[in-house]
Length: 206
Image (cartoon, rainbow, N blue to C red; front, top):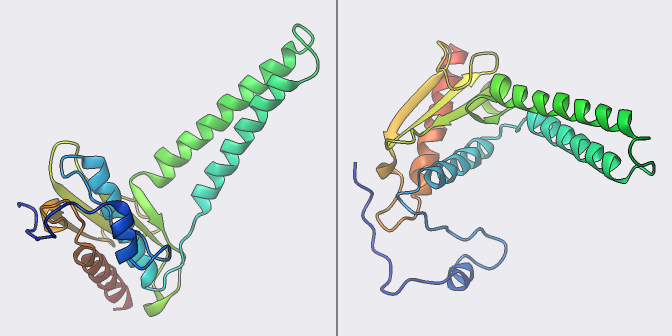
C-alpha cells in the first residue's frame, strides 16, 4: 500500500523550527524517515508501539537489558584490567589468559540472552496494570525485502515473535503508518497497538 498522503508547508523546515513548534525541549521533535530505509522505519514503529504500551499503564520489565548492560560493563572492566595491570608480559600471562577466557564467556552470555530469551522482542512488561494483564512480550518484524510490519503480543513464556496460541498479532503495510513525506502517522500505529493489547487482555479475562 502506498504511503499516506499529507501536505506540509512549501519549504522543508529545519530541526530548530520543528523544535519550536513542538513547544521547546519538553517534547520530542517529529522525525522525518527515509521511506526506503527499512531499519529506520522499523525503529520508528517500534518506538511508537513501546510508547503506546507504556501509556496503557503497563510497567516495562528491563531485566534482560539491565543484565546485558552489566555483562558489557564487566567486559570493559576485564579489558581495563588487562591493559593497566602493573606487571608486564610474561609476568601477567595467566592474567591475560583469564581475562580473555572471561571475556569470551561474558560475550557468549550476552549472545544467548539476545538469541534465546529476547529473540524478536522489542519490549517486555510486568504482570498487572489495567485489566490484570499478564507479563507480556511484544515483538515485531519487518522483512529486509518487503513492506509488511508484523506486531505480535504474547504472554511471557510463549515464544516472542512466534505468535503462540495465546498471543495476538496483526500485519499491515508500512504505507499505512507513514505519510508520503516520510513522517510517521503515530496515532495510527499507537491505536493498532492499543487495540491489539486490549484484544489480548479481553481474551485472557474470559
